Image (cartoon, rainbow over all chains, first blue to last red; front, side, top):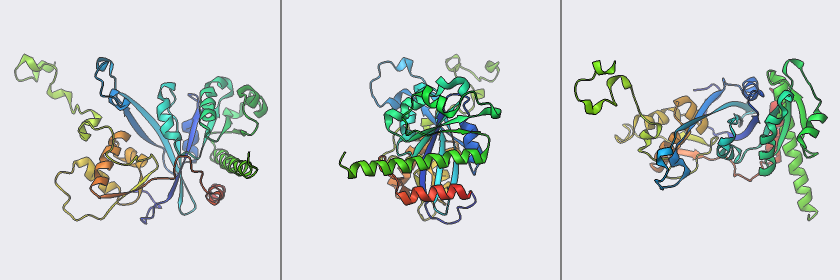
Length: 199
Length: 130
């Protein structure tokens, strides 16, 4: 189906989430680094998926389709990174849970003109303990605030990286992913050190 | 308008030929919303196992489409996108095929299991080399 898949070997798959407010550039970033045209998968939500046989309230049952955009990057011969743009609306948090399950980490894209839009994403990953960084998307070189100002405004933990990027640019977006994976590695080292020192 | 196409019967005025295929997504799973086995993570990989032709007659067209698309390993998310089937639907159908031993499933690492340092290094190096 795709090139580079000529054998039957199953690659090691890793998931990275790309979150942020509406219009922050999630789909743009995924498209900039993906080796394939970004794909879309849908989840159809019905009352049934709540997992109850209770028929009360059936009259209010609605079917909603939530689309998730994703891209793919093959690194080396046997590792595939999947980048999933998180569905924007807050009422789809439970879909985020599925996405975040086993995720390597997350990129929270911030648009400094609407910084508050990324608060829910930051809160979510902090609460869940998912490693993340904040990437400030500088549209047209427009950059109202520096990385430090964003860190202060978002009240981030000191170890959470804040980087500047241009989500339209492949190299810049790639650097964001590299910074995220390096952050994940540093966190793992710190955790090991804490365990070793008995804290 | 539609009444022109309607042969007879006022009892059926809610359905007509122009309605097209009105199939709710989970109709093709017989209303099942959960796979019978396994979780089928978005990035789990699925591969069809060699099966003797002809395929069992009870398989639906969607099952057959999945078997055709999984001749090479493919992730659940990509399968859903390529076949234009909702994720939950694909999972139920994959569950059927898994139960019949027609596919093999490779789930990714566990939820709280951090990947090895050498894997992370390989990712960083791989990204740098792109």
